[in-house]
Image 1 (cartoon, helix red, strand yellow):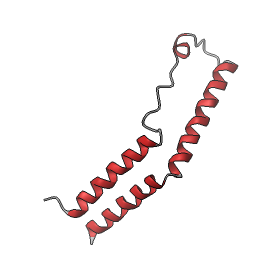
Image 2 (cartoon, helix red, strand yellow):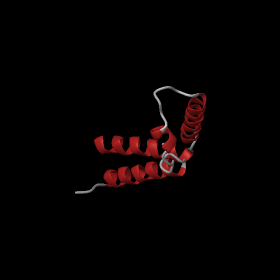
Image 3 (cartoon, rainbow, N blue to C red):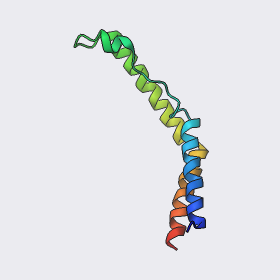
Image 4 (cartoon, rainbow, N blue to C red):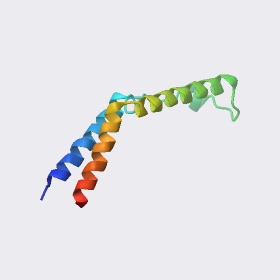
Length: 88
């Protein structure tokens, strides 16, 4: 039997997934480059390190924007409330 708390949990879980997609976490393209796979000779070049550093900075910006998103925090609070309601 599906209760109100279960429906509430599923709604906020879907909202959490939407917030992850909206903030760019889900739509990030693959960061593999053909030259990384083919031309890697065992040592890191300056170009390779600069590209990886830029990639990490982009990931940091995405994480910061996720934690500043109201949609994300509404979904998290809603999930916690729905779990709390199921134990009452």
